[in-house]
Image (cartoon, rainbow, N blue to C red; front, side, top):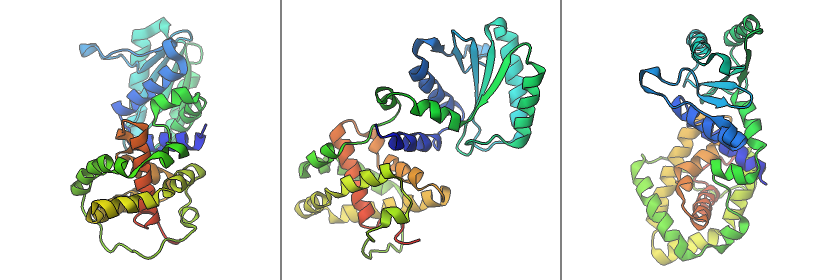
Length: 304
């Protein structure tokens, strides 16, 4: 199993999530981990969910998710206190442990100092009534990556195999490219694209991990197929425009995630609609096109 791939999927997924979308993702993860032992309370009119974003039945563990786009210490502490009291008052003896799951695009392993201090104080104050814990998205990731692959593929797309990439034919490119034509018209053009030859160590220059490198290398084996498609179809202008749009998206992502090339790679896969593929064959074509753009120097850097 390619754990690096699923780790990239997880890290990339987090960049899309805040608020209710993070809560929904957390609940999907917990169902895969705990099956029928995990449930969540459906918000019910004015009653809402009474601070219950998930519940582990045998252990009587209640989860509360908090995933702001930008974390603010004072607001977070107020939210913790409000949700904790709400949950205790309504769920009462059904709670043996209360776990705060802190997520969001910019919250990873570390809990901001004033929030951590408040959680430690809260834990000490209520140690005789209810156990209190907090999970970061890094802790949640360790639980996700412990899942077997048959459950991971229910959370994320699996990577196309080398055999699937080698099996695509020229005629398989057209339906995927038709989808990407629409994408290319929706985004602003990039400018000053450098078309000098690609360096052989481009993957290493950009510090992409082994999973990304393996996919790019596999997709690159079909570069001749893309060239053949362009020759037979006369769609060179479409590929040129597509390269320009993907380059523009790469530059945007580079500014947003300057130190995380693997997140950029996964976001580019999402941008080029890899996650919308409905067949294994289409996934292989999407990946092959992205690898083609990588090797034409449309995306990522040539030198440090």
